[in-house]
Image 1: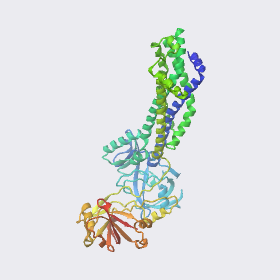
Image 2: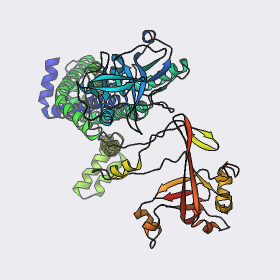
Image 3: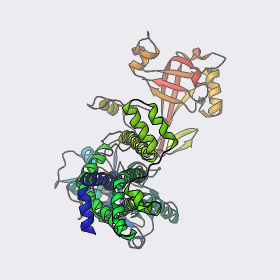
Image 4: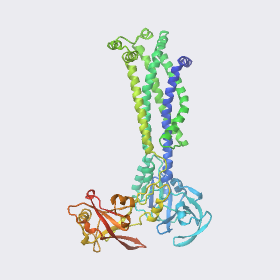
Length: 612
């Protein structure tokens, strides 16, 4: 039966090639979707792990040993913080150690050298080494103040910057709940422990498991938000979109195969009728069709292999730009591809053997003479057209309505898929853009307490000094810097005799006139903006920018009583309270009011102070 099936297919070589190519393209597309999506997800995870670590979260300051933690369904890497080292007025480095499991889980890599293993050996993050001593070379020694003792240490390794990228607690404090910037050899002498926790499931399950673990330990730790919400935020979308396209491809392919086999079997049916007349039964016909489908399918698989490689690379290039397959994924890919091949093969066999059922409805003689078409009421339309093209079109529509509708449907759905694919491709370029764009964020979160009606930061704000910002603006490749002054702990003060109706209403809406510092009233909820010469010129066409320097411009909510002009030329005070060496200190500034602008858009939610 197999040899006979091959002879029949060779006798209809053109149809055999068309069926093989159509099926091969479908197989290649579905297989390449699976392989490329897995490669993209692997690349996505590797990038995320490199930037944010593979840990699902942290346990901080718990009274638990690593051996007990390892008995659970997750991996744990231990790290400890020993001390802090003040590098400059604005920068301190945390000193600590990590075990080998923490290095692996965190994907912490060395630029040069090795991790410290012996006493008085250190490895330092490259950023902190540059700030501490850029001339310090591997193998050289240097004296550092560690735990109030001057210790001579040897530099054995330079570590890739990692700590600034990782998720940290909202109340981060150097040397308490951050990460080591200067690594020393393992010194297990602490009553409490810190751990990087890694679950080995899908990202969504890892996040859920970490939240459950934090509940057990009374929220002594955090989840790795940057990993889940930045690094892997598109992970599930890739899976869902891939599955969606596989289903759509399968549906479209089914209709296409139905159309192909419809015409293929249109002439095959007469041969089946001859076999039937020669004494063949339906079972033999089913076997014949099955083996024909099997031969076409095996030929299609061979044809799809080189096509699959090309499509695999094309899909990655047009979406995520990068992708790599892990050998451990091969079994999953093979299983998934096998399932789709079986489904596709089943659909092809069902469509192919469907024509055999016609022997239950029509006689062999009827099929042999192809008397499938009978006169119908639509035939008169054929004679209304003199044009050959129009007449042939009507003949196709009237005599073969199923054929026509099938072709129209296939063309329509294929066009829709192509259009949707282009749309998704353009969207994916923005969503999954793996090209490197860099940004610097000076402050993510802060904590403060209220003392004498003033906000006093619990820890120094992670801001950029103005001279560094100006230097950064001059750096080649910097297109724009959005400068937002960090003024949470700076409060504007106004003397009671200078109070205007606009400012009074604003204070009542956002605070109280009784919030005083000494004898001055504190103006709450004020926004600040730095105005450069270009922006100043957009506000004032004639005034000289030099006359504005060192002064402030007030933008106040508009009120019925306009008495804000009396503030021009007067001075407003600004007060800042902060901690230094355990003591509360204050700084106070005074600025002259250059001008006051009333804004109708500021009446509900904005009072702005602009300065240069």
